[in-house]
Length: 172
Image (cartoon, rainbow, N blue to C red; front, side, top):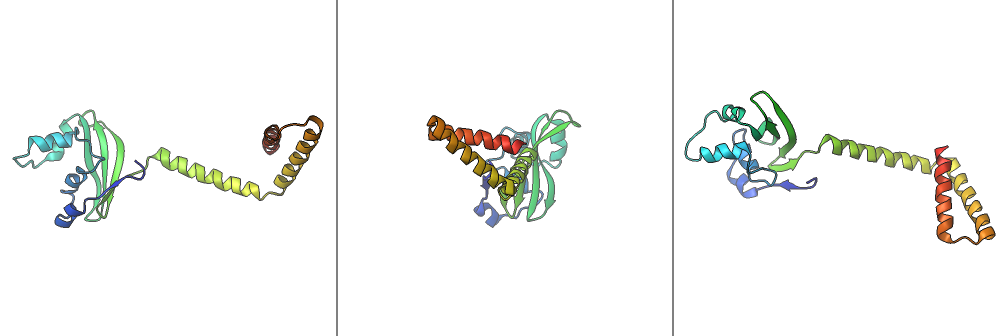
């Protein structure tokens, strides 16, 4: 769900996002689990008011959503967590709402993978500009030409030999 987001312009036209209404808005998104404790409490108290919803959620075990941070009315961070006891919770995901659009926050693994890929891309770009790289290509091509004359090797075999020679040369 890297590129998935949610926005309900009709809801936003008639309502303002506040700390109290943001979970209701979030519940319309595809990120919301309909089997969570928040939904159970919402159904149980459909015709009455529940003043201390956080107190009730702390006593329940299972998946829950909490507003982690709020800068009304433009920015909210919501966390999905698993509660095992009143004191023990494990956070699974973070979501953020920016100007009414709900996004799933990337995980640490995704951020690390992206940064690692960018670093490797930049390193490979610097290797293209090194002077010994051109010399290695030329030596490998000359070696392939000599081999082709001696054995009549096919183009795919020469490409494989070039690749292995070139890789070994870079490792040194």
